[in-house]
Length: 133
Image 1: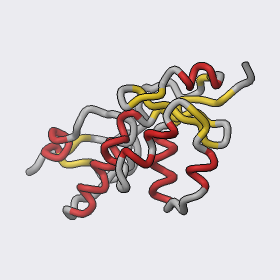
Image 2 (image 1 turned 180 degrees about the vertical axis):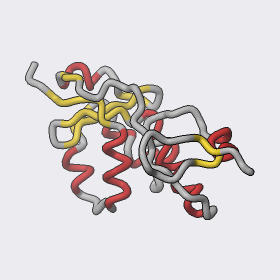
Image 3 (image 1 turned 90 degrees about the vertical axis):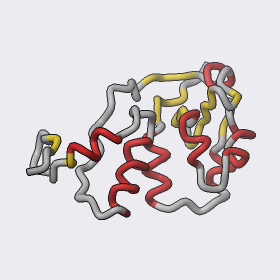
């Protein structure tokens, strides 16, 4: 009998072999891994919440300090996202995101139609809300 990782509710358990392969949880990594499992035919459990703080408040000055590939924060509709760990996974490439690091990306994000999955991945990177200086 194969081992499974128990879940705290009535979701399907994740096979232990798949759990062992699960990468360290960077924001969004769970959903990328879940998609890979789904494409491989595994039964999936919903990704569990991680321990990151996602209710912080930040000023635009705070966001502006994170304007590089090494630390990329951006604002979309007054919500602050840390997308550093997602840059290499972004389907059109990091070059589409990098010019917006450290600033308000609302217009750039809105100029492109994003799927529900893309919006879900975006939400995984939420770290807080933008407040006045």
